[in-house]
Image (cartoon, rainbow, N blue to C red):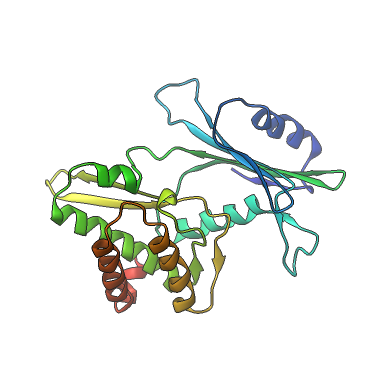
Length: 238
């Protein structure tokens, strides 16, 4: 999977980019106007029913500006950079199938297609199911460790809402429960020089938008997060 921008071959952009751009599906996040453009997400069903569904994020004129890109650059390209960085840290993210951006007459269009996370559920779904206290603590501990690993590496999620966090728990061959935490929607992710700045932002967002997460669980996340920071080697190793 490569990234195509305005410097890519026009023929390649026209064929593959337009095929994804014109694909149809159910809008799970209707296109809304922000950042001087529009952004929305569609759910696409693959012809092979054994393969996971796809999420296609489409953006038109949805850009951010930096010193390197004073005239604007699609936020999708920044999101792809974060996906790659998180994966290098051993943090689970959706598999990227396709990502591209094109500019015509000064207007940007960008696409990010990812696979649905198989076997993962949202925190809301997880809290609605019956779980033991031990499993609940294990999941929260893994979430805290994941955020600590991210922050120690100099990254901030930027949009750390429960709807952008998914969890998966399953028993391995030995009967022990393995837990995974996946992060998604990374278009606001950015580098931070100080761990405490990333922590204040992400943990603050999680607390304000925790939904049906009990306050005691939020406090436990803060406690185990601090414990993870005290063991940076363990945090940084996959």
